[in-house]
Length: 309
Image (cartoon, rainbow, N blue to C red; front, side):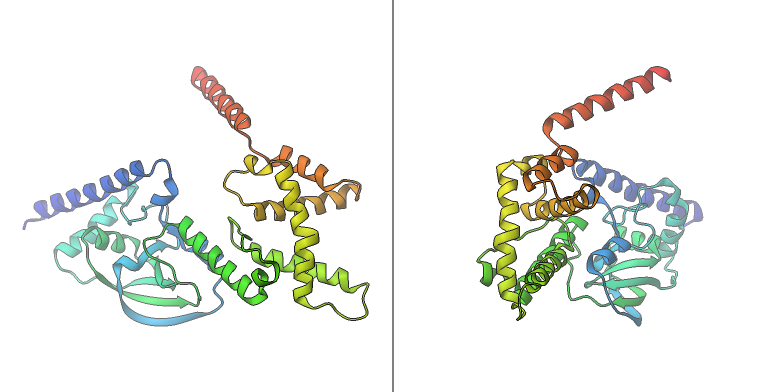
């Protein structure tokens, strides 16, 4: 095959891959995050790995490579190239595959059973486009008890982390058995640690007036009945959830308590929980009326900009 034909072939291969990225973006225009390549930094924040181990050279299944350390904006979730400036480098790698030239190994992070590219994003993109099953890689592994699925989006991985945190919290504290409440659910990770700290703080204040330290299970039940449930009653009473679509009642408990503490520090303890709930909703709530007003404002602003062009 002549160089001209080879060049034509790589140009066609890139165009196909680039068009697939565009089509993938169109398919997910209502949920763009589902077509976005996962950032390694985002996953590290979710899983919080503690140890890092050098694993050396390995042969890695290409289907398990799901994200990138630095180039996650250049490729879609299937590693198809989104940007035209990737063309020259991408075609260079493609040419090497066509000529059967051995390329150096890529560098990967392994975390949760899936892989993220440190170096070699173009090589992974070409390998995925050509449906190559395995690739040689130098691997650094980060320890995590959570195992991720390569087909999941960041949103699904986040949900998996939250579910893991809930299982751990309920198992270690026996929260469900003590309270008979199994709906302590959150929409963001890290909140079960917040709840545990709230319980420990509640336990500390109870112990201030006792000669013997109260047991943790009794502190949990006391916190649940005298702190958590009253806040939930106020959330229901003020119909707060309709102003915070996508959040849970446990989310709102954490946010309202934090907001109440901030108000106390600034203005003292004169405000009731009902006052705080109303103030919080007015300040942070997003009703359908507010959404419509914001859309109208954006349309007016856009029209002004267009008129001035």
